[in-house]
Amino acid sequence: MYDEASQTPLMPGQLLARGVSRHLRSHDFVSVEELVPTSGLRVDVMALGPKGEIWIIECKSSRADFQSDHKWEGYLPWCDRFFWAVDTDFPTELLPDDTGLIIADGYDAEIIRMSPETKLAPARRKVMIQKFARHAAVRAQAARDPGLALPGAMRG
Image 1 (cartoon, rainbow, N blue to C red):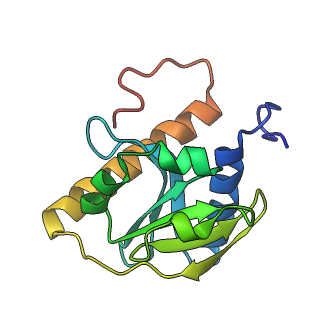
Image 2 (image 1 turned 180 degrees about the vertical axis):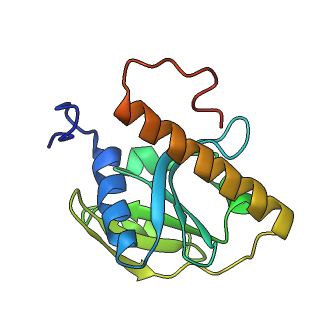
């Protein structure tokens, strides 16, 4: 499967992220991919809800991909809810029961298990919404003007 904009093949995790992002729009969430909440962490999908809710979704395309991820618990302080997104062939029994579960493909997704909610502190929520907004704006500007070099573009 290809990314329609660039005509480059999408990796399995990118396909999951696309399906997740499409599904979250049906819940009135908007999303960005590959956002850095803090140094050393990069989330696959961060979603922002209509009331300022922040969800992080980690896309895992295989057992090996999941087992090599030692950073996921570091994402928990940066969101209200945390989910795994996997395809129908993924062995879901590997995933922690106290996290959310989304089954996805390149076209859509379904929330199978809702994540428990741990509300962010207001100051951290403000920081994350600002990071989300800057990240989305940089991506939008890069799409409109691909030749423009933006200093610190993805740090925002």
